[in-house]
Image 1 (spheres, rainbow, N blue to C red):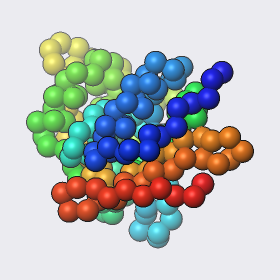
Image 2 (cartoon, rainbow, N blue to C red):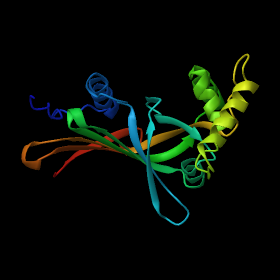
Image 3 (cartoon, rainbow, N blue to C red):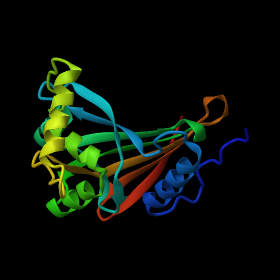
Length: 202
């Protein structure tokens, strides 16, 4: 396996230029879910909590994922709207760290994305009381059957408790594995409408 290309020395002004290229490479090299990322939130007690979610969109406004707002992560983000994201592409020996404020996506965005999901996933969004106690798998299957029958014909509406969050980054760090643990690290920090950059010791 050839050595991965290091982060270019003439860093572009916009970090999304690097992210877009890295994600495109991951989509061709990662065997499963190149858009998977670790999402870290914090609870009322200050204890951080992490889990994997899927990136569903990104642009200059931020990085978007969807969830049940009544889940643990949903409740934590609504109460404490800040988050950290981590992409790890093992095949490329790269990772991207993102930190920033969180906002809810618009109703129009959420409706459009929900409508694009497979119908079984739409039914699942209604059936799952995400993060709450489940007595047994049969209880979940009953709820899936119930909502499957309810919405057997026609479009499935988006549940009112299911929507998206957008993380607006204040920091983005690109990390590339290096020989002898001499990794390459480039950090973008928000500065007004633009970004400042610096390189860090590994």
